[in-house]
Length: 293
Image: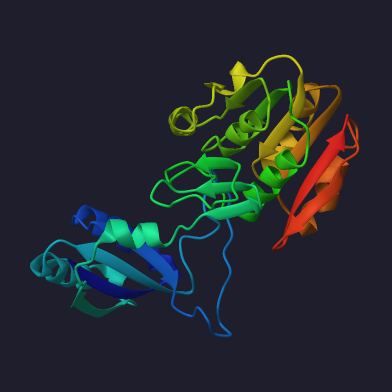
């Protein structure tokens, strides 16, 4: 493979990426050319929402091609376009052959939730002290156990008696929270998501971990649950406040994650008409909020 590297101003990024796609680039990535400097620019977006910007003030674009001649043709053709006038070609270089599967696997190690509860990729041996083990490989759906929000939710599950509970995992992603609840004694777990790919991933992961879940789109959720889990993001959590609260049985627990520390008051205000949220855990700038309903 060969790598074509470009430097583009923000206003040219979208056109350049579309052109590279049309020229059969295997992949196209955009990064801040000023990263790790005082001029670095932080861009944040939420899944399912348009990005706040297409690129940075100075964006480095990296495109991979099968053959050097394809990268050279792409470089030449881009240079002729009007939108490329303020951009430049940084160069073309070969990409060394690697065992990409092994390289990817090396980036994912077992994740400790508690000393007895671990998430372990299938290519790793579980730690000897692990009593509850979720086998989960990185995939398309969110939730591999590496993100603080997922770990906080799983810690909460591990520290509460889930025996004989009816549990809802709303926005299940990979199904990791639903699987964790089932492993800790819940006797009925509904796992729902708006993304069909997430539902499919959850079903596969449940089978791989030998647990039984009821999966589907959000309309699959019905009635009351002793525990309602939702690890999404602050904005959809605020919108979903009445729906999620209505699913919590009297005396049940609402567990919310995907919330930054600075967003705590926003969530408290959004849920105030329905219940009283409190911060129950915090990690790396993220918080877990819960309510006893």
